Length: 258
Image (tube, rainbow, N blue to C red; front, top):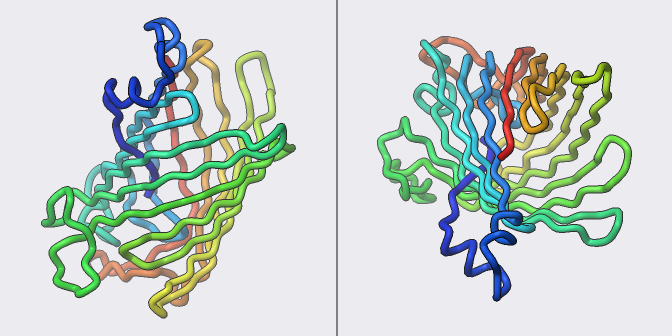
């Protein structure tokens, strides 16, 4: 599960101070896209799909941002959480510096599972009527402007009634004129507020990135993700006869900014 949502031009204008000329509005808006391919899709230590195509679009206006991220499984994938693992994440957030060292990030993510027989606005029901699967999660994070870019986030899923605390780090090292080695990792803990399974998870990645242009790059590398869920997985894949929540996989991604 990732992030996303779209914002209309009217909303951008309403949030901007007046008067605002067209040139300054254009300079304040940022747009970026990415297209990725991953041999597995593991989120918070649980595998949701195998080989997957992952496009995304990110919109920004000053300190506000909107993101849309999509997971599209390729071929016959493990059916772990949703049939086929199709997922759309819509994110709206606000990120701003607090001082010269700290910054804060707050927002919400709406997780949509198109594969399930429920509508776009059908959310997971606590009474268990089985008519909805989508969920809404709020988050807040603090980031430190320091080596390894450390950050800590707290997430709360309103409909699943789970709370997650996650720490992250990342670092990029130039190795040639247009080539860098990018590494990152995270460790987190999921608390099931309804008395379900609490578990620890972690992930790490290492990529080589090549700058195609000033605003475009391509990267490829390996990842590892896993958890301490008893039995190896949070959800059994009864169709494929496998349980997977940990493993090594690889990915490739193209990024572009406009």
